[in-house]
Length: 523
View 1: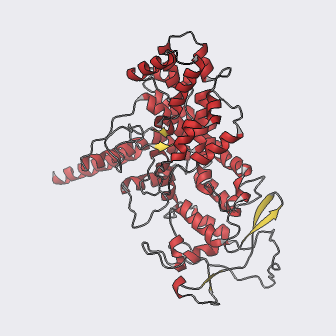
View 2: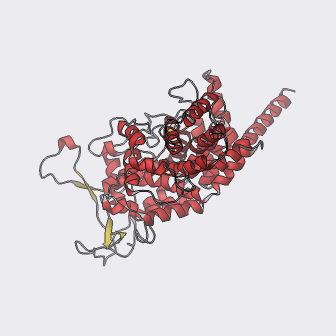
View 3: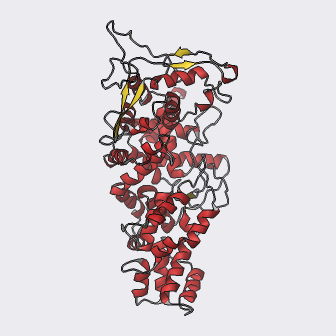
């Protein structure tokens, strides 16, 4: 009898485990998040309302806000599956590829690329990256292509990532390790890392993989060549270095792993003369060996760094935060969940669109940002996220009715200057007085708001609707939600006051909404 009972328990456990494995990832995410809430006696925020969800999902997936017509249709729909249907619709929208490419372009280059003017304008790279998201190419596949850097910067695009570092192996290695391995090695350049296990030899061993890369300038097109020989030189801790000290060559070594085994040089080998640019692939490529190791499913850092970065993108905070510092000192808030995401991303062949679809369909993603938690580290409440400069520009186009009409050069430059660096290195919002002054006083922004045929001011002024309906349109166009009763009353009072021309009153009302904190943030 006891044996039978034990066998039944084992069978039940096995069934439960297989059932969990068969669940959609979104449900597994919610189960693990909920378990932490219960364990720590945390009360989560309510599910976000439809208007906030609508604005959030548009900004996160396609980088802009919905139009008035899209907002009205979604908010009046009684379809219980309208959220999941909208997610599917936006993931199939061409703007999805544009938005994800914009996000990853900033990850790979930042606002001020290391290569200066060479990398500042990068249409070839933008086109290459956008094509990867448009085709939903697996993450590991396009990362391999990026790191192999074949072709040129104009036609293929990918080599520009290396070109920005101008063949400086240490800088290249720091960026690759941080972005794709979630590992900060910069501190180990001058001394062993004070807060992690990495040593200077780990630093230079990884840098050695890039020591043979050469940037080839072909006018407006750059390419990346690779020599067969060349090493980085290690001179020991910075504090012990002496003038004229010669370093020792350090061979390539995989991070946390083995030394790279290189074959002997061919007997008849001759390296190119100093200054000559290699145009042929060498018989043995360190770059190729690093790429194979880095993007492999059994790499202990690669997949984990990827899912943590994507989680941080949509949940506004990594499971390990900052997202590019997966060190022993910086533990995950939900370690079991991080392992689950890593396993599932591998299982689904690094399908980013599948991962994003599961994440934004989760209840955790769809929580309200309204709540008492200032730092909701257990994801019990959605975090506010400032719009990027690109999102601000796109949202202004939609809300004012500017459409694709070219912006004034002064406005475009000003928007990038004021909104280009909205967060610090940890992803936290950096308040700016100049940004507030710009939104309240800029003449180009005023011109964008002024009445022109077909724009928002014109639609409101041309309408025969009562002022209450016009105010509803203003709010749904700019903030993607209907106004509260008190807001509607206040705006109706202003618009019907007669203290100025109707055009001036409507333009001021639009400007007030655009200058609000609610417009500035994705909530």
